[in-house]
Length: 390
Ligand SMILES: O=C(O)c1ccccc1NCC(=O)[C@H](O)[C@H](O)COP(=O)(O)O
Image (cartoon, rainbow, N blue to C red; front, side):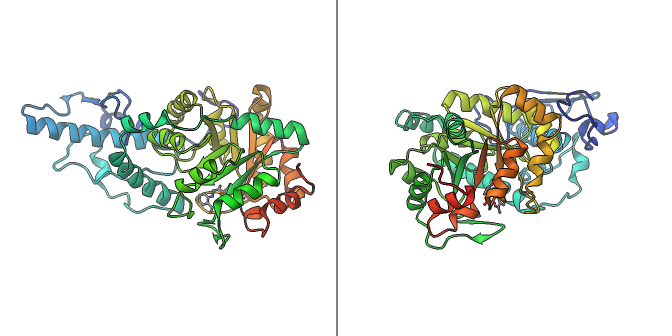
């Protein structure tokens, strides 16, 4: 089936705009626009039905109305594109179609539910609001100026590779995580710099620092404090990226890597963000959870680091066999052939768990709960690996 990289079985096509009766769908020519885009270029969708253009503006007021209608339609179109890629996480709905809307998406007026269907969707909708507010306070132009004073980006990928070659074990990305939606508070006496220093002493190759405040009790202040405390491990800004503006923001706060979640971002967004990461010197950890996401990501150029999350971020179910399942197929062969570094993420508690995912083919692991809740997190690392990593 067109576009499949490693999955032999054609995916169950997700009903999308292209599967609707043709009469409903006017030919569209979309010049890319992203919701919450960098707005470096205006976004305009030329939606033309057979009966002629959907909107013809004649006065300044109707120009504004026409633009509002087009922006709403672009947002709807983006949702259709995401759904056609099997992405179940919807973006925060627009405030609703413009008054008296008549256009190709009018059937969407039936309320599809304006409340999140699971925690990941809730996190993403909340992030959309957060980022919109942050962008108003700190426009991209101001961020770009701050980039000039940002600390230099460090080699996140190189640190993982070096650790794996030195110890023969997966390189550890140790997560500075106070709490999570699935487990609540993990560590009451939480000093992010102390945890980070303990991880570094325990042999972590890199650190992952939660920066989401509402659901993980993390912050960008934690990321900056760890960076400014002189911790040498390269830092992953563990954030829910929904807008390229966040990449610039993470870099100005001292991040060396960012997380791009395939279950949230359509292919075009990932492609675009990979290019921006390269320009900023950021390493992109692209995260998948199932074969369809893995297949999509392997179709995107420039990806050198892929994480398999054993946690289903919609149901919280954790199963480390997910890593084995996804790497034993064609996707695993392609990854090995391309020299892509694989990271096993979530649900790793014992040396047997580490051995299991290493046997499956990962060269790095991302671990939070099992080490952050130890009284001495650095000692927790030795217990996790069954040996001193130093
Ligand atoms: O951990 C959660 O409850 C969670 C819920 C929704 C979205 C993301 C979530 N966690 C992010 C992670 O994937 C983990 O923090 C990371 O992989 C470490 O997992 P663990 O070692 O099991 O703490």
